[in-house]
Amino acid sequence: MTDSSSAEIPFESDAKPRHVAIIMDGNNRWAKKNRLLGVSGHKAGVDAVRAVVEVCAQEKIEVLTLFAFSSENWRRPQEEVSALMKLFLIALQREVKKLHKNNIRLRIIGDRSKFSPLLIEHMARAESLTKDNTRMTLVIAANYGGHWDIVNSARDLARRVKKGELDPEDIDEELFQAGVSLGEYPMPDLLIRTAGEQRVSNFLLWQLAYTEFYFSEVFWPDFKHAEMQKALLEYSRRQRRFGQTDDQIAASKKTKTTN
Image: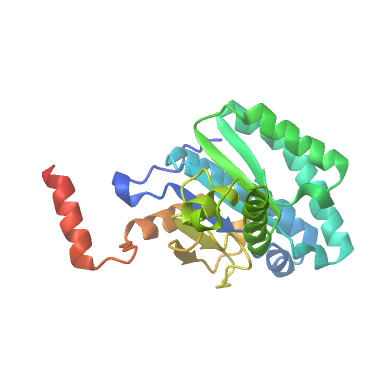
């Protein structure tokens, strides 16, 4: 999964994101631009996934989360949805062994209840095969929605309160965070969206509170090694404040350097 043509960026450790999330947009427009059938764009997008995984693994990114299929995507034409499901199954069958060989763990988040039994089975197999891998975690969000995620966490807390296991006054951000998808991982540091759109589309709504956004005009199938490196380089130039002033951040960095 590594590409020797992609040179590692000389980041400082605190300028490199631990968690990158991507909304992979523009497959259909790429296909239309190239006078191809819509499903061709989704197939071409798989190559972009490989490229981005290679770059992130090479740059030692801890978590890469890809928005593959939203809970709203079921509204698309049935022919396209069926093609996407077939492509997802093929990717699980063909790509997971490569991930495992490269010590990459696969996680799948979202509501699996609408998927076929065969697809659900392959999801479970893929996660089981790679569960002990440590180089990087690749998260695929499938039939995922941020509202669904937040409601699930709230529902779980309500059940615990009803059972007498939890006092409502004890519910805080940390408890709520533990109940959402990816609660055990660092929050996304960088969100990338391709194809020129500038919205989050119900993706990781809770988790993106302090995330840096990077919008690319490039359609997803063309977002490969160089474009991913460009996004990481842009992130390295950002000053993340988390509510603090520039002077406070400068003083904190000075203290770290002194120590």
